[in-house]
Amino acid sequence: MIPMFANLNVLRTAIRCPQTFSMIRLISTNSLTKGQLPFSYSLNGPKFVKYTRDHEWIAAHEDGVAFIGITKYASDSLGDATYIELPEPNSEIEKGESMGSVESVKSASEIYQPVNGEILEVNTALENKPQLINEDPLGLGWIAKMRVADLKDIEQGEDLLSLEQYEESLKHDDEE
Amino acid sequence: MFRPLLISSNNVMKQGALRYLRRLHENAIPNSKRKENDGEFQDLNEMYSDMFTPNQGTQHQNDGPSVKSEIDELNAELSSMNNFNFEKLSCEKLQQITLKDGKFILRSLSINPYYNLALEDYIFRNTPIDIKDEEKFQSQRLLFYINDKCAVIGKNQTIWKELYLGNLIKKGFEVLRRLSGGGAVVHDLGNVNYSFLTSRDKFKTSFFNELLVKSMSQIDRCSSVTLNKRGDITYMGKKCSGSAFKIARGKAYHHGTMLVSANLSSFHGLLKPDHVNGIEWKCNSVDSVRSEITNIPLSSPQEFIDLCIEGFQREFSSEDQEEIPIYYCDEESATNSQIKETMKTLEDDHWKYFSGPKFTLTLESNQHYVSVEKGLVVQSNNPLLIGKSFKEVAETEPFKTKL
Image (cartoon, rainbow over all chains, first blue to last red; front, side, top):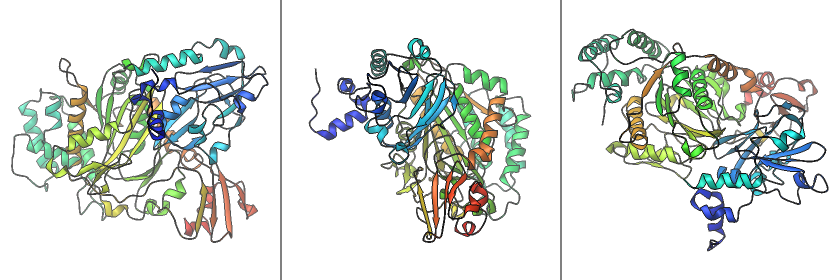
């Protein structure tokens, strides 16, 4: 069954408060935005796109460059972002270390490095437009570009989920 | 409703201990006012109220016979008593209860803001959660602490933009940057900090303040305590509580302040207004939302804490389960290496002045400007300033008088 939304505002509320509209999964997407850099960095798109249970995504390309951001689910549940704390370029960050945070209406939400690697660049557009995290978290709102230590960490990383697994884990969250 | 915390938390209190406490109370605070006796625990209640209530009138004129030393004295005597269950957690016990699944309430008796924030962070980080199965999370925790005079800014704020540092130092306020988001607040001993910890999954920013308002609404005096649009607790349209949140690793906490008997007039001139004449800030740090503040009409910080505990117990203890345990600790009894390390981080200038958002500050129609990143001047019309720490630059003219 596809839910009917009387008007855009209801839809907006539904997107921002997914817990009240569990059907929202049908229209929300946690897949990478096709036209944007995290996807289009290499011609055929990233080799792997994986997700963490902390709601980060990582899109790794053939040459070992990867983009990191937070998922649509995360940005919806956080609400309007007011400040994005970005990592330091050229810093080596170990898997599981905090690499930044998203602040939205008084909440600081930590972002963790999904795999070992070095930060090459950060998305400075977020400094002046933190709302990109809400508008396009899997595209324009990418947080960092990094060089991963080993692509295998992403391919075989036990705690990294595929899109299907990630979506499945969200459904699980909603059942309660 | 004015039940003594200790009695409500466990029923093993001995009459002898009670008499002892009464005597202690009479000796320690000779001038304390006596209310008409409305029950055998009245004195005990008053003692706890007095312990954490600044002595209005004398407290803020000078730092004279301070409440702090009375608290220390009382704590020292209390901890020397073994005949009733008012035990402060040791490091080992703190670790044990933190790492084990289960709910608890913890009251820090320390008034050192660095210790209290570090203790909160320790419990937050170490509370167990199965990130693959967050629904199973049953380890909600509730902390209370009261800080000595201090101003606290949010993690993503600019300290010079929010605070009159000179006034704060002059008036003996400590200055801190906390680990959670949100805006700047001022504390004193008449303010209670509460901190509710749960799983990210179950976390809702409005939840705990709603519970607090519900708990307080049982009291007539608090019937006009409500939530405003931003989810803050207000009384007669003025804010009496500020909130901030932190989310990490499948868990979240909501911590907030509650002004009960704070010396509000002493807070004037500590937080900066939105705009100060002659200064222009260009930065994307998080703004504080300026609000008029007031104390909540409760008789003491302890009364607020008791109400919170009742609300928490009602919400989270199930019929067949034992009551949620209440623990006490302080800096002396329970500072482990993790807490010590966090305290060091919080105290360090690196965290206070050399972290946080970048900004550009312009004085008096572009005559002087500095761009600052990670606390260092990276650009300025005065080349001599480049590379210097802004903390130093802010201490010199022409910035000093303007900041």
